[in-house]
Length: 324
Image (cartoon, rainbow, N blue to C red; front, side, top):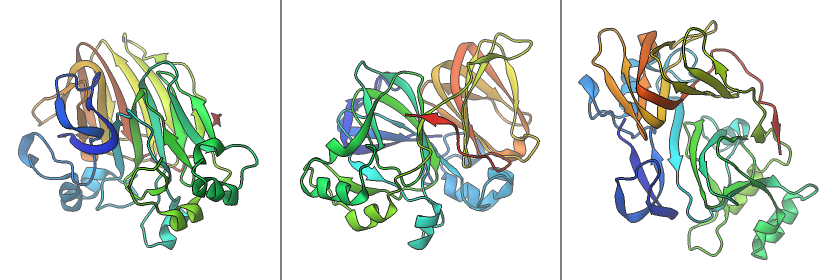
């Protein structure tokens, strides 16, 4: 995939450590990897967008685990917060359908890098009501009622739809989310961007499953020097971390269904191979989409490779265990 770099007022011109050789005149906040408008970089589909390919190939491309056969199900992107993001909320599925959207926006954040003191805000402080949040917004002190958490490299944070949230500076994040860009901005520190208070306050939920995901330690993959760490398994997405030193065969299906796979390289370099296709390079900052119909593919590291794999679960999963 060709990354699509999105300017944001809270971003930065230096996208190190993910894209250290790219400099920008504008502040870049996000690098979109699998958005509807993101384009394919290689092979016979070069130049087409994910939306076009999903519409053309449907289940062969997205898999039977995806809700909509005609739309790519997951948006993965890097976030580079250099200043605080706006305080915002995304609707859950129920609230989104009320306003004519096909689904809401539940997401998760994997912290690739975090400087000392890096923080996020997730939800409201205990006993704070939506009415008190609205009053704090009008009095320009919304930050005071948010639940702030320190974050560290390797954390996985689950952000259920309806959760008020924001990111502070000092981290680099990989976000995996439902394919939606419905965001209600509640508070923006006096920046001139429009707020959506009516819609946003209606979407706020006080009790959600959001928090830092409680997960097992990385496990050695039998017969190899590779390790796999399950980062989050949730209703809309499953994300794993792989640390590879040896070639490893992976599959686009499990016992319950099949899904396209999104591989995002965080460190090192490797090759993705599949029968009947030209090998594809996967290096730091790259995303490779493997169509569901490929069935089996091999990731071959060049020395070492660390990457995330995102997919849609083939069966109904509960929300993950989290802590604040």
